[in-house]
View (cartoon, rainbow, N blue to C red):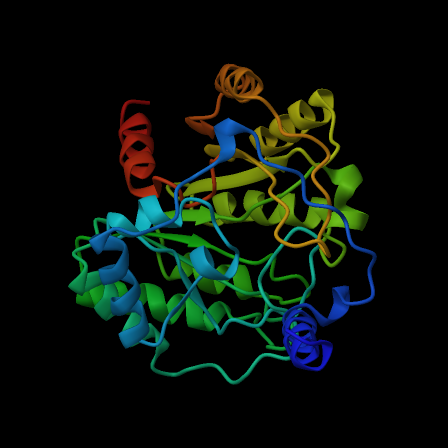
Length: 321
């Protein structure tokens, strides 16, 4: 192929990357390390995966599974489980770890709650996870849409338990109250990384604000299960991770997830190291000793991975205390 024919293809790739992550375009590239054997997964090819994909497309729904390039998408979608991402697929923030597109979001879809609810009913889901992009452009950060989705799922599929994974609702007074009042079974908000790394990894957020959000959710509804997670492999120390655990417990967090950070593109933060499975086992053991009711800690752990199974265990653990 001659240079003239090759150029449009290169320009298209560059333009596509620019559109998805405009805030990262001028950053230097970070090489992507080869993944160790324990972190590799097979490409999704199952019939169940295709059925889940088609069902979501038919309802015009986005998922964090696709947008954030989750490594567990093949396994989860094969079982009919997908984490619905409401409020569009464009985020108003540009975190250094996240593959969700950044830019100016479109209008809120008034049919989205109904489509989320119909998906839960059609899939006969025992447990549904609803998350969203950050919507700093909205007066309530999208809280009313979360509440509408919760109510719609309750109506269309009463037996489905509901987990919300929300943004931090920073500078959005009353947003948390709106979501909690709608009655989710699990309130999840991820701290994502240790506080020292916030300026470079999660610059639009504040560690102690996120921690306070979790504390306030529990204060608003003492029966609500709260959940949070962090990534490792970004350059944190073990003592920093243990301090985050203590902070979460002080905020009353019930469920902790710990997973390996994976670099989506050369423009994202580099992986500092691939944490071996034995260290994840150690984190899990330590977290249980600190009083978490449920812990998921492994290289491929993500907030919504096995969320249905883990919630059933979490609820059983809560009933026994």
